[in-house]
Length: 398
Image (cartoon, rainbow, N blue to C red):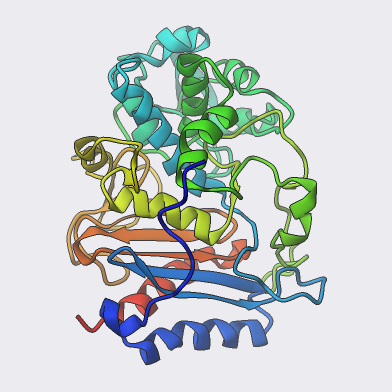
């Protein structure tokens, strides 16, 4: 394995990277207050600029039911922060000439050849052929016509739920075969709808590369980047490092149920199945910020990397509020379109995403900056994402 180019020690003096150390301390102050108030179990955060770490801290407890504190190497369920990694893998295959972005998905996964589009009228579905085939680009940018079962009411989403489409017992091939039986919500290419597209993309990687998704990622991404703690399950010797949520949501009192990282799944979900640490994910983001290169290893060409984090939606409308005002979507990331409009400070060209259990990150190329927040607090994910950005940006001095 190559020596990782991005190591945790020593953390730089924030002033040398253009930060006020005192103002960066406001992150800890704010999160500590929430830990003390019993609304946040614990968190790890990492802020890096110009290729060096300015801030890398942990607070609270790793597991609210145990006494041990949160540690910098705690392992988190990152859910949808899996998507950018699997999107990267897809573009790596594209760069080898094995795939084109306009390829119809059905040519790779034949089960989708006969998937119709549903039009719901008076509570009933009328089915028709799609206006055009679903493509690899549609999967990458969530314009495939697929959806998620938890995004709202409707017959198509009800069928996802009835099929238990997210079951971890199926293989990726079995998942696609089952999903392809359910009609599309809309015609491919006509709307942005957050969806199980990247789960299908994981199967695309498997078919084209000729190996399981987890094996491809381990060999081609995690190994070269030194992401030693990232995978679809946590080995037994590391179970004591898994970060856990509160048993009940502190705001609603409802039980919190997250996937079990100790179980090796049949379904290696390209859209939401990975476990990782803050430092591992930082190595991935540093590679992206460096234009696809890590030390002496290049995973992605510079222009492909730029293409990946550019907006690919244009005038295509969004069907749900997960794509917030001021943002478009690239090939695996949401992309900030202007300095204004967004719900926190930032720069045009910033790219970002998060996970449903509370993890989040963003990269600001103009500022040569990225930041990661890892926590297992699903009910507060939408609260902490803009808050964390505000607290990082307010600490910048030059």
